[in-house]
Image (cartoon, rainbow, N blue to C red):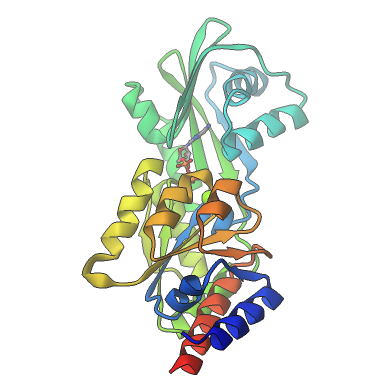
Length: 292
Ligand code: ADP
Ligand code: MG
């Protein structure tokens, strides 16, 4: 790599808010064959909002939100924040939670007003031995509409489900299209459930979806995609994404993401615009051409 080509490439990137941390990052960008994209906060805005509240007839909506918000107030997940905000906007003051337990990639459990309250995905309720009953169908409907279904059990009974929507970033579909035009395969990687992920992937033109991946397994999914020496880039924003960003041949962080993601990545997209992913690869290819 000639120093001049590297300087030109780095400068071009900087103008577009694409920060290549070193010469190696620029060169690797030219060779990427697969781009893996985290869903929440990368392809979507990461600003989830509660759209649906379904409660069985044992609780009023208010009692239900009071219990759920009590658990989620102790959680740090973006979904938890959305639920606490929704409860607040509905004029519901959360109860106090005790014996709080966070279950990474699944949800949380706590004791509220003497009741055991479980809030999270289907797998968490199953793990707790809760039968989904009538809530199974409601969950499926929400997922097929691209919503994330947050299931709630009270004392071992599936009491309700909340639908949470996280809008796609405006340029996500265009970014996928541009990557395909560069001959690059695009994969969505997410901890969210399969039906929800597939719905959103379909809207964005992404054909490969790897869903229901636990935070600790994201990096090994990237490693599997690297089999046969394929060059893989990972784009992410979260603390959860850092090991996968490190595992990838090229880690790309969303500028609005967490510090850990930004520190781990080789490239940072200052504008948090998915369209800057194909831009980064194009700058890399241009740089490599000049070096030959
Ligand atoms: P993502 O990759 O979507 O950011 P995570 O790996 O953090 O997801 O979590 C995976 C899934 O676990 C979420 O989509 C959600 O269904 C569930 N979950 C995790 N934490 C919570 C929580 N505090 N409240 C409700 N659901 C949760
Ligand atoms: Mg994310």
